Every structure is written in C-alpha cells, then in structure tokens.
Image (cartoon, rainbow, N blue to C red; front, side, top):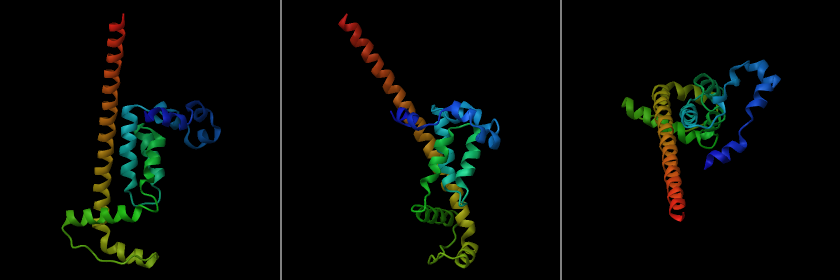
Length: 178
C-alpha cells in the first residue's frame, strides 16, 4: 500500500511541534495532527486542495495550498506536493487547456496568439484572454480537484474492502485447518 511508503517520508509530528523556528512563524497552527495523518478524509481533501491550486495562475500556489490545508485541516505535505502537477514543463499545456475550456464555456472565439516570453506580450495578450482563461482555470481546478477527491475516496474504499475480504479468507482457512 502506498500509505506505508508515504509514511516513511512524512515528517515526525513531535519534531514539528518542538521546532522553534516553525513555532515563531506559525505558532500553534502546525500542531494539529491531521496535517500529517494519512487517513481517507485528510488525503482526499489534500488531493482536492493540491489539484485545485495547481490551476491557480499565480506564482504563490504552494503557499496558498499550505494555507488552505492548514485552514481545513487536511494533509499538508500532499496538498503542497500536488501543486507541482503544474510545473514549468506542464504549465503551458494546462493553462492553454484551461483557456480553451473557458472560451468554450463563454462561447467566445479563440484568440490566436504566438507566445513570447516578455512583459509586453503578457500584458497585451492577457488583456485579450483574461475572462476565458480565469474561468477555465476555475472550472478545471474544481473539476480535477473533485476528480482527485472522488478517486482517492474510491481507491481507499476499494483497498479496505479487499483487505476485509482477505482477512475473512484467512480466518476461514484457519478454521478449516483446525
């Protein structure tokens, strides 16, 4: 199960609680044990937060994901880690897809543009496409966040059902051997 693998790399709750630098910055906000627990609710909500924040077109996605994870008390490392779905390699494709979704929803004609890495290009092109782009980012963020949430809940449930079936088989086998 990935839970055991992930637990190996999770920080120790006591180390975080006793870290003076973190306590100076965050106070008691990081003392909540749910921020590091791997349970169905915490992980599924972390997937929602991380995938939603991946579609936020701001450079502070990780900070916002951490703030939301602390506020709603879900797994902090998973929330922040999933933001990296939108990394420098994937972000052009994700944001172009979000723009196309927004243009389709608003029924606006798609704006043809050639990408240039400059502030001038960003200012002129973003002024022309901001409405469908931001709407598409919000819709894609909600959709993929919800998809991640539901998928984790279903996979977790499936794992539990299979574990219970295996336990019943082992008990039945032990009884038949007696």
